Length: 276
Ligand code: SF4
Image 1 (cartoon, protein in one colour):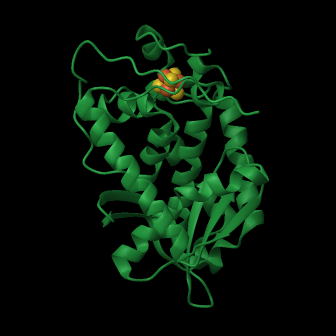
Image 2 (cartoon, rainbow, N blue to C red; image 1 turned 90 degrees about the vertical axis):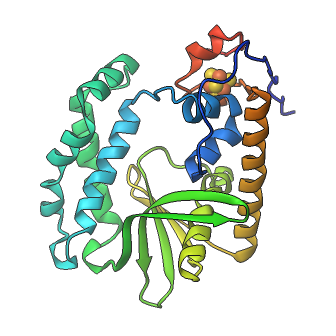
C-alpha cells in the first residue's frame, strides 16, 4: 500500500518575502507539483539552489552541445566538440559552484572531467550531429498556454527528414525506469505546446538524450496529451496564486521529495518534519 506523505501547512508569522514569478516554466511547474514549499523557497523567495556535481555536469554538457550545434553540420565532429570542454567548464565551474560541489561531497573536479569526457563520447554513439538539421538551439519561447504565461528554453528543435519536428532534451542523470517515463516526459510536453503556440506546428515527438547511458527515449506527442499538460499547468498556476495570497505554500515532506531538495535546513527551521 502506498503511504501518502504527511501534509504540513504551517503558516508563516510574516508575509512571504518575495513576489510571484511572471511566468511558469516546465521546470518550475515540476517543482510546484512535487512540493509547493520548495517552489516558494526557490521561485518566490529566490533562495539560491546550490549546485551539485550532477547539476554542474548537466550544465557543462548542455554548454558543449549548444556550441557544437551552432556550428555548420560538417564541422560538428568529436574533435571539435572537445575544444568546447574548457570554455564550458569556465562558464559553469565557478568559485561558487566549486564550493557547492565540494560541500555536497559527491565528486570533485577530476571526476567531473572524466564524467564529461565519457558522456561526450557517449553522445557521439547516439547520433551523427553532422546530419542534424535544427531550427533552434537553446531556443527561448514565451507564449500563453491556456490562461498561463509559459516560458521554455528548448535544448534543440529538429526538423526530421520526413518534414516533422522533434523536441530534443538532453539528460545527463539517471535513466528513468519504464514506469517513470510518462512522468519524466510529462512537463517536457509543454515545450511542444509552446512550439505549437509560437509556430502553429505541433512537434511529432520528444527525444530524451540520456548521455550517461548512450540511450534515447522517444515519446510521441499528441494533441490530447498537450491539452492535458496545459490543464495541469493551469491548475498549478491557479494553486500558486492562491498559495501566495494565503501566505502558505503547502510542504510535502517525503524521502523522495526531500532527498535532492536544497532547502531542507530552511524547512526544518520552519518546523517541517524533513526525513533527512
Ligand atoms: S525539504 Fe522537503 S518539504 Fe521542505 S521544501 Fe524541500 S521537498 Fe519540500
